[in-house]
Length: 503
Ligand code: GLU
Image (cartoon, rainbow, N blue to C red; front, side, top):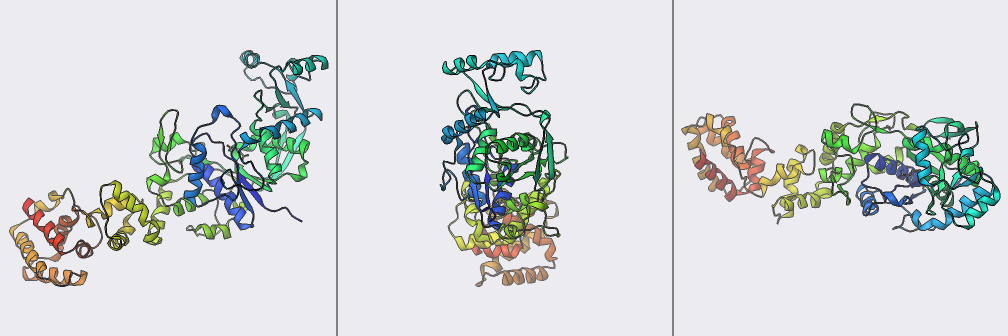
């Protein structure tokens, strides 16, 4: 019987979540849902020196915003917990000791200063088969010395004893056959002097104990794979190993290297999923969410960085992605990040989605801008009228605030050069005609406007732009009679009067 599909996302809580990380979450999630499997979130917090308060909560918030809820996690619980590595400390020591007993690992007593000194004299120093004999460890020291050091609780680490000149192979679901020669691999620390495991030991032990069937992670972890394969072989048997897939990097827009937080700052686009403030430096990094992206668009855009379904289709809902995603179709090579394309996805999703789905979010943005909405139906109609013009959710404020609040500035400079007495008279008559109207509807407003223009021998086009600017403040917005209809009779007349005073 084949193993139940169980995948995991295993972030270290060290800061905000880069879009590369969210894409890893997404591919894991899609694969799990597609196979009726489980999606596990495991917090890899064994490196206490890199732990950042708030980063774990941020990860949960990001996953919730994206709609990619795990089935098991420190918050969602499950039968394979604890899901925070710092709470599993005792488990790892057992396995590290077991490796020493079997001769696959050894104790190393070198003090940090000694290692530092060594690195100074030999800059390319590696703790490996050729150097371990000169170092202070249970392979180079005699047995009684080692026993003595251990009984005195001398600070020590446990290192893997990487065999010499062996081929380590595995089949990657994206890259196919991958092989390494162990001479490229150093004797990595597995258990640190503080008793905490390193990532290498913890990831292997936990993937086994949590019965992970498929391990998808970023390409940056590929160089660590041989250590993990060796550990699998020594501890649990290679045949029980999860199937690996190393996901391609997300590259800078020019393709030169991995997309970094700094690139986003330099080029003016977000690289993190949500806003992140580093509690140590107070440095704030903008996120896609706060920039005004819809989670549907963000997810859709991420799915297509490095994957497509083999057709021209670009717009996919999460539901469709679950049905169509396949890890084998993920490209091997890195994919360039294209912010213009990301914006295109957002624009498409804003246009396609029902306004109700983002109305509460946009309402908050209006409140933040000091515009109070007391009529939800009118608000919904206003959003519907302008949604085709919005790339970001934040654009709604600029595009629709005039429905609820008279513009603070009216771009008179656009009207003035072509303004004359004839136009002035037209608007004075328009005020009169409009005040007599009983039905305040788009068609009636347009008819009245055009008839009056004809009577005054004015081309409607010559007075439409001034009318628009009087109502919204500038040269933008949906149909001018839609605007007048929504703004209402009294307010339309008030805005015309106010503008006339400036002309
Ligand atoms: N803790 C690693 C990280 O922060 C996980 C790598 C893996 O998935 O094996 O990305």
